[in-house]
Length: 234
Figure 1 (cartoon, rainbow, N blue to C red):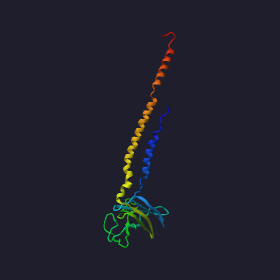
Figure 2 (figure 1 turned 45 degrees about the vertical axis):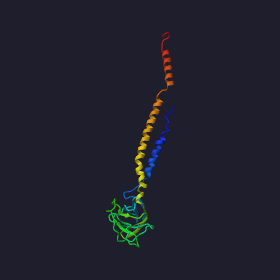
Figure 3 (figure 1 turned 180 degrees about the vertical axis):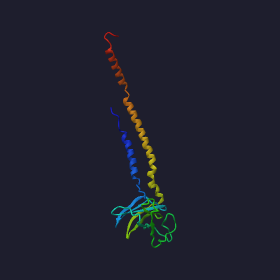
Figure 4 (figure 1 turned 180 degrees about the horizontal axis):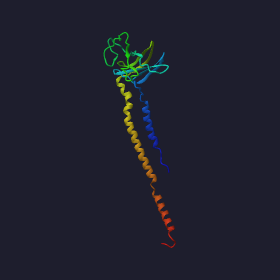
């Protein structure tokens, strides 16, 4: 007789579900997720942003500039970041669509006819000091056009990417996996304990002799004892 193993796939399924959920969570570097990594001229430029920028909240944008041939990080490169609002955004005169996180004032480079905001990036503003960054508030929902301008020793290049900005109410859309982790971990623990108890009961039932086995053993023992007695002994 063998102990059934049908319970193991249930525990395995829960473990696989937990692993899949963890793998789907956004992976971030020190400066955020990699929005673009592109070789331009003598540079290798990588732009980092939050996984899901939210409209009206501080958004850190950071840039890493490397020498293309050696991969060395060029900490002395000058970096400017330009932000152009979504084409669907209606720009009203005097309206602030993009401004530094520390100020709500309209940057001087913004006008009603050319709603493109440009900020210098610095190591002081980046959480990772190998990067050049800045923190801004993007107040329009949609696909912003982000351009990083890099200058170093007479060389200049531009790297552009799309920066999707979401409404603040969409925060729960990416937050729910984190909220689901504790209940899922508790469920996995409960399933594990249930399986252990079930297997323990099965082992006990397997090792405990049945009534027929006890009766057969008693008969065999009685027969063996009678055979061991000398003939004529009652």
